[in-house]
Image (cartoon, rainbow, N blue to C red; front, side, top):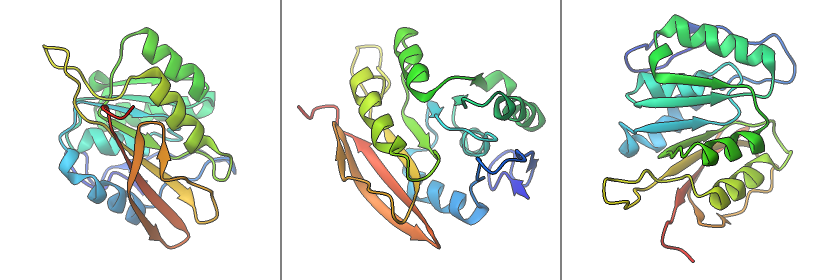
Length: 196
């Protein structure tokens, strides 16, 4: 069973996808992920790039995120995400996209969207985390501008396997934390806007 761990929708059950290609984040790992970034809440805008059933993006909304973009390249996953967003009552604060991760990031740049939290839970051992961080850096959509155009910070939380080759730096993203939970690792990257 997958559920929302905490916040306004805490305890609510979420639908999952009956597929070998998806792996819902375990509740204890999800709780650990959000504990690692508690100081970033409430955040303004969340990008959940490989959403699966939407569990991570919905968790962020439940904990006070203002808005979330939830994306998956699978149409079946997007259908389940929409059901879960509706079930938890977050329709007005969530947009669901059915895109490849690179297409999604290009679209967000084109539409002038900015994010202060990015969630990455892609298929393991495919290099998606590094590729996504580099695309995010190039697109320059991390850190939300204030009225004077000054950009705030951004944090990325990534779930990956023990054997995956994850570097400490991708462009302006620098890894600040990495913790192991069973066979799963969670890495936190912070965006350094001033890094050349």
